[in-house]
Amino acid sequence: MESVPVRCPACRRAHAYSAPVYPCPCGAPTAPPVLRGAPVVPITHRTWNDDWVAVRCRSCGRLDQWPQPELYCPCGTVLRIPVRPPAASDATASPADGSRSARPSHIPLPRTAPPPRPAFRPRPIRTAPDAVACAALYLNWLGYHDAVQPAERSPERIDLRATGLVARVDATTRPAALRDVECLWLHALSASVTSVFFSLAGYAQDAEARADGLGVPLFVMDVTGTPQPANSSADELISTGA
Image (cartoon, rainbow, N blue to C red; front, side, top):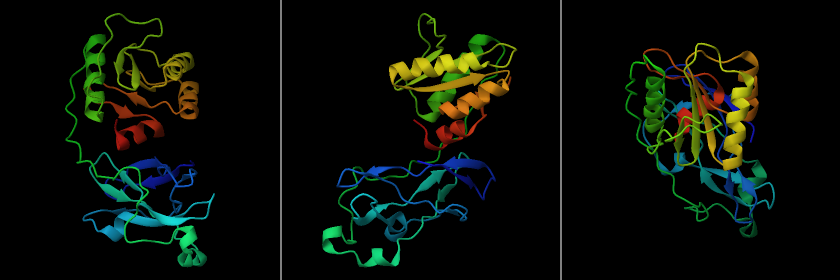
């Protein structure tokens, strides 16, 4: 699904947003068509009509209700992402097409808005073990509550593991290289998990470009122990959490 640029009106932070994909009753993946360039709206209160949008399946033509796309900014603001409304012909869908009903029946799981995260409490970094410990705290803050350091470091240089995730923490004084990013991604791919990279010295330009293409979240850490996102994948991870 193609991402669209979104800027939070509260903190002015830029995000790359992709609408979630749900299965239509016919089995085809369906996503609300995000309206590129339209201003986003902070959500201050919720109503049923605002939380659902009409979307037509491109495969079977069924018109039904789907969750309104939202983005959770790290500043605590919840943003409603505008969606392109159905064409006029969609409003008169026949019963065979699945006309709009008062309540959707095909959504696999109800959507609940997670509470805003508390502010991350960093830990000063003085040594390489401090950097790993700080990264573990940050992953815990993101929702990976079982992030731990392996008893023995693997040849792939995995510093932290959690359910569905592996992470590397580079505490050296040189920017992380292209090979570092690719090795982490390949290990995560073979294990069918997500990969995350933390670095104290940043990243080489080709490493950043490769991470963008592979969808690897990159974070830069400083001596205060506050990880900062270094690419759009990291922004998305902060927005969605574990």
